[in-house]
Image (tube, rainbow, N blue to C red; front, side):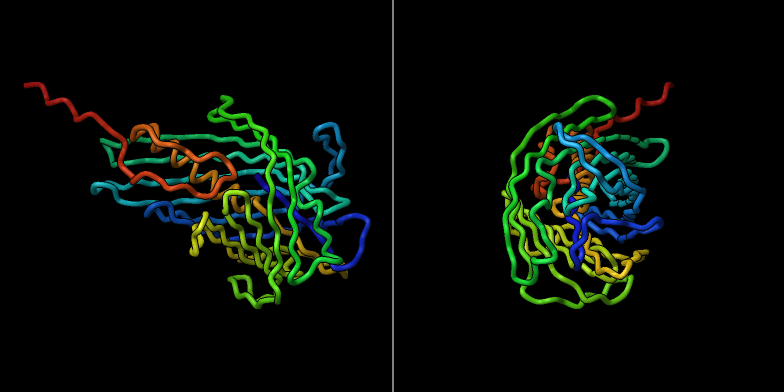
Length: 309
């Protein structure tokens, strides 16, 4: 689910990171009237070597931590969502791609108030590998404003719901990448940055747009769009970061990646909760654009028995 593309403004044999680097974002999304907001932090954890589909990769290890919440009144009773996400991203150290990510989300949903309160908890773990590594064709020493290209990647995904295997799939997907024709100045809580604007579009028409700053070492703003939509359904804005360029301007970005992973996990689990409590509905698969969702309705509950005479 998380696909990292990494580059530098000067040729290097490997991507070196520094201890203590991190990037923190404010997140906001709306799911059919439910405002969900939170914070996501990516941090560098160190280097490692992993094997994916018989190929060994030296990787940089990034940790993702996020918390989110949202609420809405349904039939006069509060419907409250609380959740957390922990993930690990493995990006190639000698290139510009990501070979694996592992993301676990825990979400708690309550409806109503004591003594008639219903509580639901779901845990979803999603692991995805990419062959070739996602973003392997990016070369920031040559790519620039106005450039575009396609990448075809085999994605192997497993999904566990509450510890039980829920889905296992292998998909070959093609992504279209493009860089805006001019740089843009973007202001976010972390400051004002001179950025390159990147867009990735999947086969279904879903889009992820990112504004990248060499100074920050990552995207400072991210917007996710569903098919044929002109308004983003999820936004991320950087509010804090620590990045050592080491004399080089470094660009790190996540295409069809962590942003979508985070938003889709929230959507999928909320749909699962609604499906279990409100009757059948179709939950979207991972890495798909946000689908049309059924109207929110409270979980069904039998009326209390009358008191004994």
